[in-house]
Length: 169
Length: 235
Ligand code: SF4
Ligand code: SF4
Ligand code: FES
Ligand code: FES
Image 1: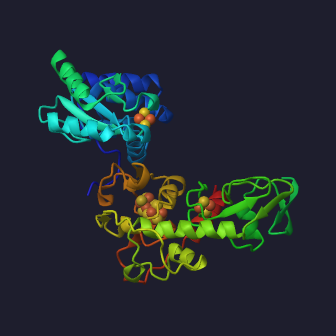
Image 2: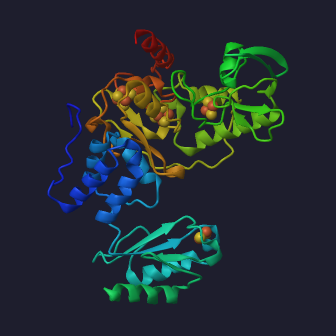
Image 3: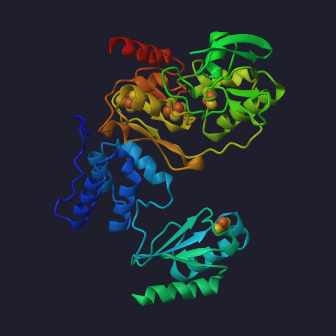
């Protein structure tokens, strides 16, 4: 049991540059609890995802109960608790994209890269995710590779594009 | 507060303004089905059982979050309301694994009472049978997600009354679950004070004390509202 209750230590190293960056950011926001979303964004940018010790650290510093932090993180699709891979492929499975063949896109990626939705390849190079409507229904089926939207794509095109990204660096 | 007049099911009622329809109904012994409401906690209009029809408004509104206005014509007893209430209660039963016969709260459960109130005899929707865990890690209390209806009374009592903030809600849609801290075992919580308020606030058999046998559970949800009043006096 983790008692007596007190802010549990996050176990982060104070000399980690990312921790320093986060601390500066929180200080700039005056440790306001309502800056939570901004801070989570900053953390996710710094780490690529949100490791648990980082969430504990933020909870301690902003005086927000852990459960509230975790609720926020799991509510927004943008935040991830797991490493998403060096490159990400996000396939929209909203109604419009689904109707236009989002499933075939997922199948194509699975076949070529051996990962299912929500998974990251063994070498951590590529992560595959799904989202419910990314607000680009006119471009259905839509995929976002890293930050770039692929409109009206098909399996073959998509796989080629991913290879291109993976080979770039 | 200025006094206003409202009409509930045709009955003329004088009330102060700034109160909710539910409060007026309670004060005048007009029955209203509720689940997520608990006196002493902020209302959030989550369960959609306390439905009302208001003249001039097309949608059904929740009585616990809608304030009265002068000359408001309110109905709480129409067929439309009853139909939706029944659907809602059925969906509650179909969403998780509510097996009253083997539940600690059998005979002492607000969901079960809501079922009786809407005359539930069978469920028309397929049961989802989601996988839900039972957290027995706390030394005194059990959290059984199978019985949880996501009313968030536990979350609100722990945050708003106890001030501990142990509980939260994770995920979205039918993946939502009540969580302790970082979705970690309740017994390992760094925030829970073991006060037991959530045990009493929970309307179903989702949270219960270990020292109680099947169907033997007694809860005192009214305690929460009384506590809030007492605290005001003591301040
Ligand atoms: S026992 Fe008290 S402090 Fe612990 S979770 Fe329940 S309401 Fe919160
Ligand atoms: S555990 Fe009980 S009080 Fe908490 S959300 Fe579930 S049903 Fe409501
Ligand atoms: S459904 Fe894919 S962008 Fe809307
Ligand atoms: S009691 Fe009003 S919505 Fe639940």
